[in-house]
Amino acid sequence: MANETKGNWWIWKVFWILLGVTALEVALGIIKPPFLMEKFLGTKLINHVFIILTIIKAAYIVIEFMHLGHEKKSLKWTILLPALILIPYLLFIVLTEGAYASLRI
Image 1 (cartoon, helix red, strand yellow):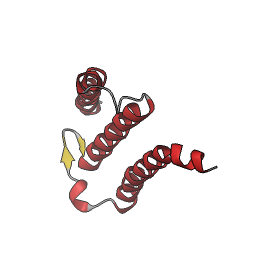
Image 2 (cartoon, rainbow, N blue to C red):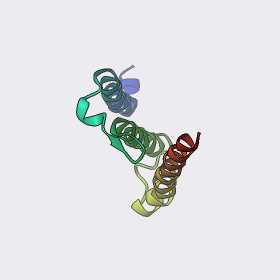
Image 3 (cartoon, rainbow, N blue to C red):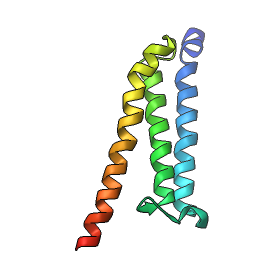
Image 4 (cartoon, rainbow, N blue to C red):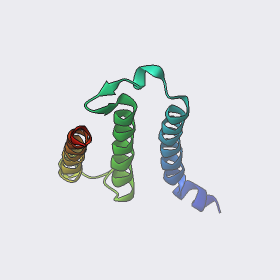
């Protein structure tokens, strides 16, 4: 029983970190601070905060559950960098084109 506790400490660390980030997202969604309700790049700033927090969570999940935490830095960046560049770029396209589409109707 003691060996099981020593071996699975990392899953609890991952759990608490992801729970903290998710709790922050939920708290921001409930409270909706006025300074985050301003428009920025076609949508509210709070949406951008949610997107950034979600990308951070996704990168952390990839690092932990694909066991990249102990690999060389170059391998980590090779796997994470395309996603960290492509996802915000695609979101930028969706947000800007969505604003144009809503103006035409």
